[in-house]
Image (cartoon, rainbow, N blue to C red):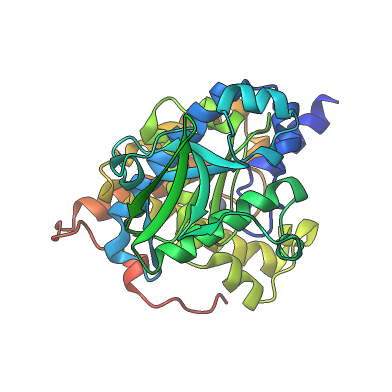
Length: 342
Ligand SMILES: [Zn+2]
């Protein structure tokens, strides 16, 4: 069983840019045995570090959106309605789970646990037919629907959100701030893992718990965000890459490894532009590699940790040799056009 367990961990950690199925929050919350308050603290931390990365690098991103620094949730994503209501209120089905402390939503007066009534004057309630179309676990579809609605609305600001607090209903006006197009989510799970699906960056609660500081967290989020910014999922699909066990061999493995190297290189620049210490990547992988052994890193799609650390150090030297422009340092991988993988 020990062997089976370490193999599972290894596969989980093998950063799953291509094709990790989204985790059902409702199912995982119960399995992860986390308190709901701790869940909010974790979500807030991920949102805060992720938003800082996305906003700071917006001048270099091809695809941007207006971020407001806020994570929603829906009563239906919790297995235990009563516990969720006791912790979060939920005067309506949608409410504010997490906020970036000084982000646009917080500055507009929104607080955690404000219930969300309407978006641009239209009641926030998903038509059942639309939920069935969403490629997410059922419990997570309502929040994914609302999140997409809000993001789309923010593409044409200002947006009016009607909220409810203490029985009172009120409106706030939001415009957001330019950010690289990427979302950041906690995946409650006891397994170490992080993922990027082309749009959303996910990190498990176990992985989050391993972070010594926000520089290390930024390293993991920046790596996954880099997969999204470099459109790795789409480019691997375009190249005809096979997933699953077939991804571990031959051309599939070689092209997947190429995307991992790109994500590692770009992550250093994303971190530096956001004011994080890129050395966080070196520290995280050194500590993680030493504690978790070489087995985890033996997949042909990923470098082993020592080689990975060498790559980070090489990229940090490249970064140090450039000058800082008005918006930071231009990441070479974002300045170049995205070419087909071959
Ligand atoms: Zn990766």
